[in-house]
Image (cartoon, rainbow, N blue to C red):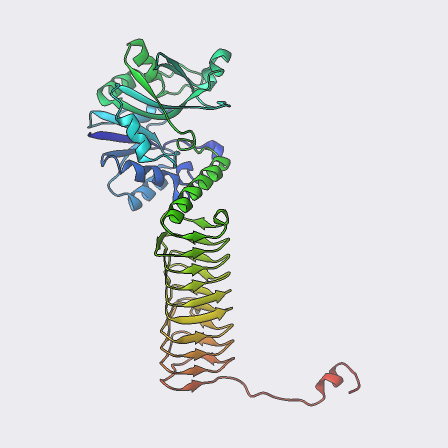
Length: 431
């Protein structure tokens, strides 16, 4: 079925208490608005996002990530409210699905239930033991007869536990007719989208309530909601990965963002954070390691290693307190306490403890190239740009500032000096 999708994302989100627009707050590494758009794209290619608050910022983020999405600016001064969001909006399909940009957990499969309804209007509802804060839904004979916002509800209406989940599938002609009729004669002086239910009920137009999962359709309106939704999504992500063969040791302690991909059998120990579009293939990520937007292939990382963005590590062992940034490592051992930034390191090379690639001179970044079968001794500094060719040794404690030819030993230290008896003289003690 051809369907238009409208995503409402114009509100200020004042309960979030943040300078960042509510819909750009991240869940599993992506703005919550992006999650709902991704699900909408599984249903239709005719998607419009309605914006108002911090319009330019949200528009830029959308254009950078979803270039085919249509953007509509709500005239929030003239037509405030959820109903006002649809004023002057052109809908080209026979049916319209209305979603909210602060519902990051909704799945396309659940939205299909609303779309497949034969009623002119289908609306999502769920029951809550404590419905405080939600619009109440009045249902008679399996038909919705009214939605009453809590601000406008009587005490009797407030006893109803069936609430509006805020997602609707409506015949577009009917929607356009009712949007034109909306009035703002309410406590908030806003145009409520929910009033179209009242108009439809007055005309005896069928309104089917579709009962949905309250967890999936929860709206994120505060940082507490954000944390709850994030935890739910983390459970979903890790459950899926474990079913696909990833072994998590204490899965609740790890954080895996939505765009991370795993291949073959992997082991993830406690406290691991993997973010961005990282790819983890046949690898063991040890406790409390952080991997950002990098590829780890058939390697062992950590414990307590930090792999920063744009790194590619293959067939390697990266140990504790090793930091790698924007580097290519192929069959490399770096056991502990090293920084490898802007580097290319080839197979068979061993990086000793305390080795640093000095890649930044205060103005620009430079590359360190290390060939095959190189032994870099502990506490060495490799001052980029520098190339260390195959089959070479860098003596411990050296500062390397120029290229090292194949097969050579490079050593750069001041000559050791011994002053006999200095300890006793310095502390005025007898030997």
